[in-house]
Length: 400
Image (cartoon, rainbow, N blue to C red; front, side, top):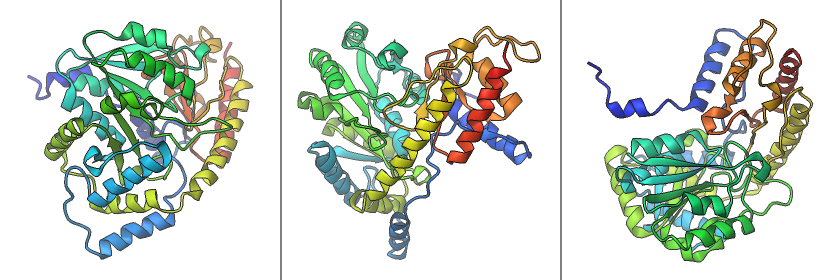
């Protein structure tokens, strides 16, 4: 008899975490492996944020925090939403989580009854669907094709909505593709959602500040204020502020929903680190200029990776508007043989071949709901990316 709950059989470990862990194990064993699986900036947390944490510890800010988060951080989040998104929230409408992922988990656990549907555009971040399943919901996948820059249309959204629809999850810029919804894109989706008051909207804006060229970021409640009372606008410190390990996410939403999320949090972790929360106050209120400096480097890396991947035989790579991922098509590699005679039938076959022969670890597209692709994170040093892309070119050239 298994000691594990049956619900665990309905989910799988995070593929991105699994690839990263495997690459690290191989590196520790002395193998020459380049890990491109983790969505984690290689820049250090800014010094002024680190100093804020040190000062907080010296002041004795080391006790439990309330489940909603410290009041000072919730005030800082309100200022951020007003300053950058023109969204008006009160501290009572803000929740602080152990990263954005926990806010997603808490929101789904607080709202989903068995069989409730969660509409998720594909390609999607790997945790959306499994979290919905853990909460006894039913993911409804809507494919955003490469021909539409991996975005779904209003007609597709309308067709996916049923009386059982509870959430629509919108991640822009996207993990894994880096594609982003423009103001007009969001307005068209919002027009559909305005006709369906039963649908809550989860806006995952974690890559808000990592955008390129002339793209202008908007969040959906900003575009359509009529959706404000049923939208959870989520963001965090991990990506733009280079604070992945500090584990601070936040969201603003209607008070009833925030209370439900905080009730869940009170029973599963109490709160995220008080020290991290004080650092987050300084991050949100302090000098933001480092973000633009980092984004300039990310853009240079994006351009390098897109150019080199498009030179690889059998690979086609679109240029993303944001985040720090590319999602190249492997269609030209399918059906080809490796030097040892194995046929590449799936994108998972390709990433296995790539790791085994060239020591490059990436995540296969099936994990994100759309094949045959792979996700590559370019949030690592430029010289490492150049080496990795040369290895990918070599692996593709060896296929026949």
